[in-house]
Amino acid sequence: MIGLILFKIIAVFILGLIFGSFGQVVMERGQNKKSLNGRSKCDSCGKKIAWYDNIPLLSYVFLRGECRNCGKKISWRYPATELLFGIVFVLVAWQKGFIFGWLDQRELIDTIFYLAISFVLLVILIWDLRYMIIPDGLVVGGLVLAVIYFGYRYLISPDFLMSVNTDLTRNFLGGLAVGGFFYVLFMVSRGRWIGGGDVKLGFLLGFLVGWKMSYLFLMLAYILGAVPAVYLLLTKKVTAKTKIPFGPFLILAGFILMLWGEVVWSGWVWLMR
Image (cartoon, rainbow, N blue to C red; front, side, top):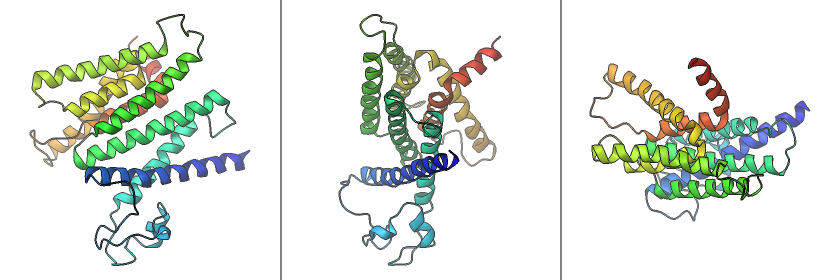
């Protein structure tokens, strides 16, 4: 049993590393308006990287962080991003029950969806951190994926065609609540307080966490964003006019509630007694 658990953890971790490597390709080529086709090249010398020098995480370790062709340093961001994807994939699979047992069809679909949406959200998170841009294509892709998944859950649920009070309805209401709130902030501030990309991302994340968690999601996102912002201001590393991307904190709050929402909700209810 322990051997099977370890095998699953390693397998999911490797899957995360692979998708982390692909995610970096999506970010860099997407930012530079380049095609996803073709092999990766060294940022310094421009030479194509051989497949054996492009193995996620391991190649960086074996090459000691240097390009085989020119000897220039490879950015630490590459292995760090791959490692992040690997860890998050294991956390998602762990929380969804894949690590500890065999899943039925519905549970397996649940796990696949949450791994897929985690990939999309992680790419958006890192893209926003690096370039201060939230790509519309990934947000729309994530929303399409979410609508298909929750639509499938609605179709197989006992509420199908019987009630309007369904998970799918609550998801749309959550998206409207969060996205609408950010849209009002965007219009009132004329884009100074929050960007248009955050409005769209807010709708996606509100859809994912649902109406019940929308208020808790907003509160958690602002708390997560305020802590580093206050620290950076106090240490004078930024000024009040410095732009800090809000998308990563939205996504972090979304991850927490997607994976441990009921636990957080129970704790919130207990605190409010």
